[in-house]
Length: 410
Length: 221
Image (tube, rainbow over all chains, first blue to last red; front, side, top):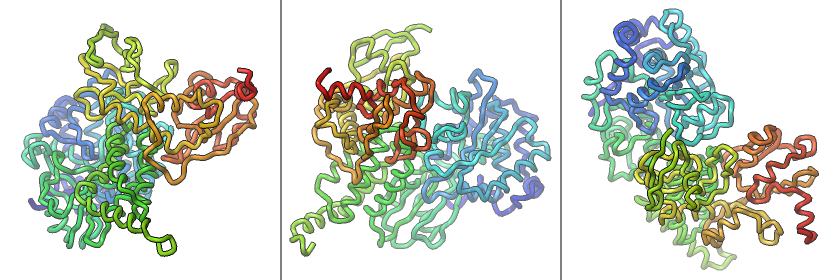
């Protein structure tokens, strides 16, 4: 399946500083159609028909989520656009925001109308501060053209925490609290930002909305696979010749993205979905990229034959430990213990029980952590133990040889 | 609202709605251990000791904050639950450098009691740098020994919700998280006065009443 552009169709074609270039490409027609010809229920039904799923990683059905918020009996509701793209190796939202902020604003306007929110927040990652002026300008221009009469769009900047991309921590951050996850239920659709019903969607998800409204949910359903409709924007980096952002139809094999488009050679492993994403070995590159198989947030990192897998997982774990909010025990302590195991493996002090301990710890973290960070953190550990077990065994064996040597030689 | 029927450990029970799993279990004399929960505080959901298995759920859920829904089937002592619970206790003990063994207060430590209840021995895990903080005795009302702290956040909640003072908060992040006062200042007389709800809430004796400690050391209590 070749590249297919739905979300990024205007990227590069329009001037992100000038709304007129966007309108010339047919921009804001979907918003006009929604406001003039459709009721909020119509829009939600259209999105439900399209089976659009959230692109942030969890893959929850948007229509269902919106309906819950729509039906929540509160006057004040909020829409949050999650632009806190802090997953390792993920930069697709940055590309979309920088090249085409208007489609996002259109998506936000339609969504807010559908769920009945009067205020929308764009939660922008601290590191994307350079996009602030561009986005503010885009919102101002849309306001001047009269597209945002029903809605106030505000930008909130993060302070540099990975965890604040998790929806409940993000809401805490907007409220001015410590960026830590909340327990669920209550879900955000019921009690979210300032205890009001809230919808949180990723940049890419919201940018899908205008095209679905224009072309219909049935059209959207024809693209992609049975459980994953539409396209997905990927950002690819690592040992490739052409790193960058590519949009592909759901269900495209990993090979297509990694080899054909990005030009990777001598692949050893591919990590899909950032620091806590799944790792697949070179012989499984035919795996399709979809919600059923593997997807995550869209960050794809390629490792070639010269890379050491345990080292790479170690680095991922250092990142996750540093970014854990420290609220729940399994994540806060578990990531630190894992780092210690990897550190000992690296300096040749591994013991045979290490692999067993990693597995036990992974299970406990996945089953009992409060939020997605702790639940997903062990994924690369388990995947690497599954596909690259020999590398762990080698390290442990070397450690044992080292231990037998007289201290003066070791 | 009306009653709902749930099954806990194979026994069908009827409870009023809304209610959390923990409340229902306590009411029916089913023991679910907790560390960060106190009935008069809003749930914390931090320590994850109270995790239970709910049929159909992707992960284990914490009993202290998960509301019951009609027809829920809950297992509080399945092998999966027990193994995860033990691992969490081990994790808490791993980074813990409190002087528990020769401390007169060790008998009051909820973590120690839990570890012996669950038959957790020497932890399997290690960390490079266990938490160590010097004990502070500068405040006449409360003694602070953060090495014993297991970050259950109960003191923060008690200070906010019972005392209404908001003196304590959580600082830093990840493994470095720490219960702090102000901008990680010393716990002096100026910051905190004499309500001591935090010491009463503390499960491990990281915060304690100095007088109690004195009397115990002297063998009076």
